Length: 230
Image (cartoon, rainbow, N blue to C red):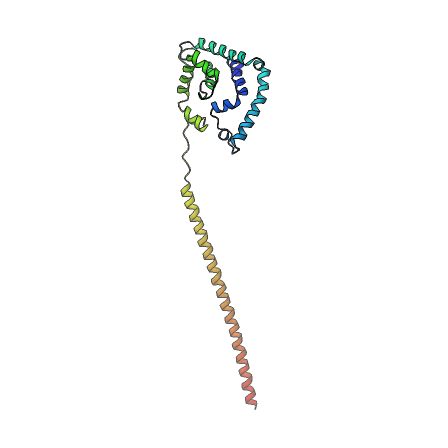
């Protein structure tokens, strides 16, 4: 009954009032979808998707009825669950079972809707089936003590220990040191190349000077020989 009937009553309302559902569930579509597309565009696409999903609601059979009839279906389902739960903590006693899990998963989508948004099924449930509201609060406190954190961060594993944050500063310092070493290495390389170039130039100048001296000496010797002949 819960998954094959009541859940479709909830889906019918979502398809019919998609904008209200987004506000009631406090959905941040950018955060939920991990995108930077403007929320206005995402909301439009979201509404379009749920209009198409309305075909499934009609195909199920719920959607072909009048709105007041569908709401009455939801009321009847809630009354059945309320009578079954009674004054017990859980549906079969003091310990939760799979039925409690399924019931909470579907009822919580109604109970915890933002009260600033008009939702008649939630209001009717609070007025006529208060034991179901208490049941949802009981399961939430027992199974999800970090409920608020999960809803705020969309982190389904907020109860698990998180790895320590990466130390970015030492890495940045190492990068700077590496950069400085590279610069120093390049400076030394440039200085060495400059020294080698100057040394090579000095050797070249020295060789040219020796050649000039030899030429001058040769000219002097030739001149002396000519004078001796005279």
